[in-house]
Length: 268
Image (cartoon, rainbow, N blue to C red; front, side, top):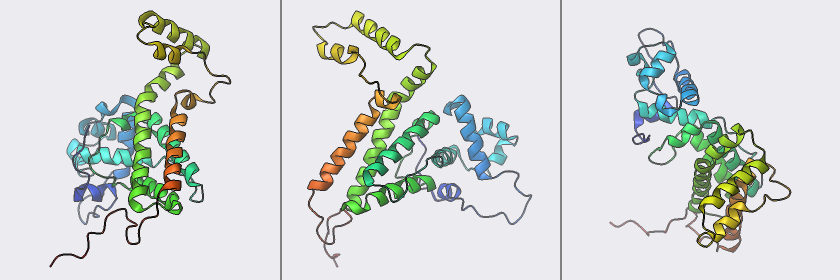
């Protein structure tokens, strides 16, 4: 699902809680927060496709048109759901080392996707604009402040980490759910996978794939499912690469701290 532009003024006012107080008429029976939390609960229970203004109105026991007085459209509702779900993310302390900060905040974001997989179906156009998106971004940019990176580089790193986590979540959340529901031990799961691949893969055509995917599990075993699925390995290598870039980059010239070229004085 892809909401329209998140920069719509009315949408921003609702998301940021800046809607004007009604001067006349009956006192509202709901709040925007109650609407958002009910929508999140519905998505958690039945998936994002189950969230419609009509169904949500039924859950909240109000008329559909009444619901539109709190949230002007479905796109705004999706933005609200995304933002209020992000409120669950516990961010690292500001004093944390930048490496640990990136690692901890990325893992927290992955846990959010695990708990609310419907978030990954919301394709929001445009830059982050909601309160808790900004809170997350501000935290990461603050952690990178002492690295010597300019604003543009820090923002690119923050976005790169977010892209990595989202991609990893889309690939692994389903696997994780199957692992949790399985009654097989890790060894039994590995044996079944190796047998299945051995039946369909020709060793002459896929020798490296067979070796990699049927090799015995490592000893000692991974400390948790995210380690076994390669998430932590990939995240650590990404952070290592950022560290190498920080160590080898040249300082930004004076006046270029924002990561953009100086175009000179404006023309007359």
